Length: 131
Ligand SMILES: [Cu+2]
Image (cartoon, rainbow, N blue to C red):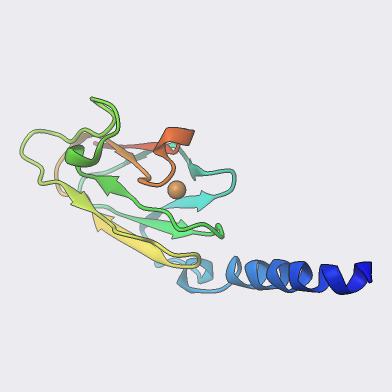
């Protein structure tokens, strides 16, 4: 009886485990691209990344949760939580599902503070410093 009750749970765990290890996020990244991983427990890794102007960053969602990479100050939960160098237009990945990738090329030097929309209240913040 107990085994039968566990079957749906086991099936769900197997499905989630499969989702967490499939998709472009698990492919080898292109050369000269800087990587930020989104993984449990709800953090960007690394939280602060320093790059050179003109470099591309790829965010790899290696978690089961859907995340976002949101550089739009209009979506900040708290003032200053998202900020961009002067003259940079806001941008937002939209939903990045498990296994998916978002990339952005940084053309303007400065410090960029960004958040994950679903999880910023839980501390999922990141910083890109472009030199
Ligand atoms: Cu998130």
